[in-house]
Image (cartoon, rainbow, N blue to C red; front, side):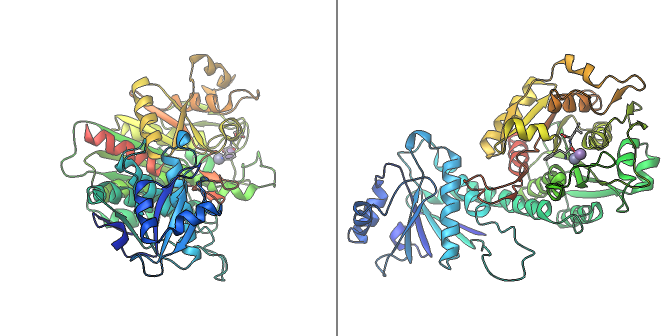
Length: 501
Ligand code: BES
Ligand code: MN
Ligand code: ZN
């Protein structure tokens, strides 16, 4: 999407739709009153007739008939002023973008509400970019007909007094959400297309686009001979070979000694292995690579933005399948750090592949680690589709991440990780086991398991099982099911904050 930010008077801006926010109960902001003047009171009439409302996500269109340079105006409901936050604007912008597509429009201009809002103009602009790009995302790439396909907005303009100052923030958000949609493409892709080898290819293509990035991937023999016994064990049941995908980002002028380690779970299909999952909705387990895809896309976004921070990204990728070569409940495996693990459930595979990746990224020099993983079904039950669970060993690091998360629109909530949970994974035979027989605290014991492999230094784990992939739309700017690209905005914002200090 192309972005413009111009100080031009809204009446003079050429676009398919010229949008502005209206609150509920409906009340035209000063700029909309000016537009209403140009439209000879048409907006007032729509309000009197009860057609123009401020309900969140409702968009009302009026034709300008040449009285403005734009073809239509769009009154975008943002809901009650007391509830207004960046997500309200994302939702309103998404509704406008989808409506634009329905009337054949490809360009949208927005007038920002300078005075009456609790959000800064820059925050408003970023939220509108997010909603405009994420809202009309089309998950139906495999449909052969044109019916009910959605179309992306090709040009977004911010206009009105002072709008030109928003250009940089808006363009940065644009880069991040375009990578977010690329992430969604991979998570939505079927598991017969999106294999570990295909993910590695994508990482290699990304690295080829930026001099600051270098790519490396290990195949099955290298994984085993490197001592990554946990990743090797999970992989061995599948005919699609695993990859340990690595991207390193070394920008010119990187600040300080910080090396940000990014780790993402990329199980391209989780059948559960011999601890086979039930058939119902098993197809959704194509999304079990959501953490890995978010890491790869975030590295792309950060490289495109040229942020001055060092990154090491490690994405372990394989399938978790049953079969004659599959690993078994009862197997005892040795992870890269030498610790032994009794496998008590082959469906608790994410923590195994992450174990090797976490240790590897720390050994490779990461000072601060964050991992993203669709790790536990209990996280979906506990927090639903809006907040991811955040765990870690360092209060400062957790709060830094939590603040970046909230600012980015990828929401996160801090969970406890007390030492007493260690007993849940005590094994009679090995250093630990990978699951517990008790149905208690499953997201926490999974995080506690990972902690065994993070070495010295700050580490945080995000369980994104509920937020990475939606069973159904959320009724906001993610209004249809499928991948959200959770984590791309968060990691980009985290990198921006770390590189700015
Ligand atoms: N990938 C799943 C977790 C998951 C479930 C993500 C539903 C998204 C939606 C993970 O590998 C898994 O199977 N976890 C098990 C662990 C259990 C066997 C200890 C779970 O949470 O049920
Ligand atoms: Mn599983
Ligand atoms: Zn899984």
